Length: 233
Image (cartoon, rainbow, N blue to C red):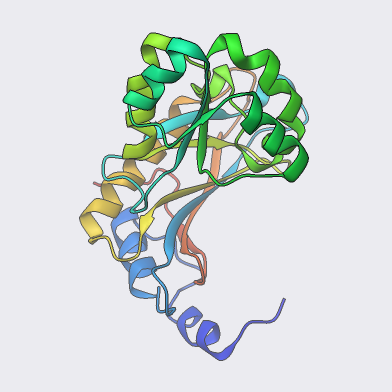
């Protein structure tokens, strides 16, 4: 893969043989985010798991202390009183039969996160093949299938910056921690929350080193390797 002159110039500022502290790496990623838009800063984890085995999957959520720096449009699959409660709690879209049909027939996906009540999951399964690959399918393990009385909390957390993460087919995780326009301290605290959350999700079936490598990068920037036990200290 070839890169442009801008990328080549900023990549020279990263020492490929160095493992940076979390503070150094985040500050450098922010410094190198020189694109004409507000780049997202991300953490990438190389895990020592075998993603072919169901007992070695890593999937959970993390509530970022300072959010992601963007408005999150929350859709809730709910009906009747549950739908009214979700709307009152701030849901942007209430997904009834008509919305489910729109997703199914038109591929409509104008939302960033989805929740569902347990009673709606049979209907939601009709659009699982559309929502699943995009990380939008409600799932109990991700905390996005919630009882009606828990909808206000779940909606508020998603809007405040709750991020779902799950390993890909190669055993990697890719998790945003905020925008390059955030001050360094906010990015650091979000990064630490992510590292702590990933560390707690170590599958019991994993032998040997769980987190093998951590990189921090911006949307258009180079990867910056971090010390594996990255922390604010």
